[in-house]
Length: 347
Image (cartoon, rainbow, N blue to C red):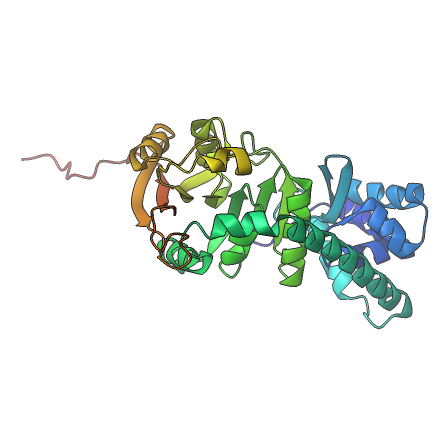
């Protein structure tokens, strides 16, 4: 059914957009989220002035405001949320703006410069950590092989909302990008979020977003997600059970939780060099935690390391990955309101 809304709501949204600067802001944000300082740089206007425009459009339901530490990001509001009619109107207005308009074209050029600077920042972080990450990757099966298994487990069907907890570089979001209506990644690290945003922008994945958030208490509505992923995250946590319970809370009935982590190992250097709290998980431990969270185990897959890249010519110094696929219980069917048997009285 097509969404309807009141005349007052539509008028408020139209008034909020009825300004040249605000239309420019809508056009900029149609390409992805930006900080206030980035928009100030692009428009060449003062921060208080830009902030006021953003505030008015946010109050009218055209934009979403998202805080990330001391930074504040804005993006076009999602039509599926409250105020969705205003959000749809924002997208319709942007679609009617000519991209060859001199002002819009100039803004697009400056936006490209801002994105290039963001990409350079992400690349610098990558370079600073590349050796450490390469060391970790060399310990287990290549990513491409792991991801092939994950795609097979999830299957080819459409996915509504995918939530990736501890998203890191956003790799899991991109893995399922062609199947999801919307993807949301959470991470506490601002640096990693910068890397993820750059990767999502490079793929033109406007339906995928990342947010700063604690996976122990994800700021997401219960029962909203069709798929939740925890990819190589649990071994960093003090309490894997709480994180798994929160992941289960996010799932709609029939939704799925996909967990990837290390099997038990004895590589102690991972504690000191890579801040691992746990040296892997026994299959039964995660299965029990999932069951305690009200989930049903669908399948477990073990992925031993390949001999390629082993430092001693074997796999004793390598890591086995375990994949768990859980499903949230579907609600019980309602009790019948009329008898299902023949109540015709006997004669």
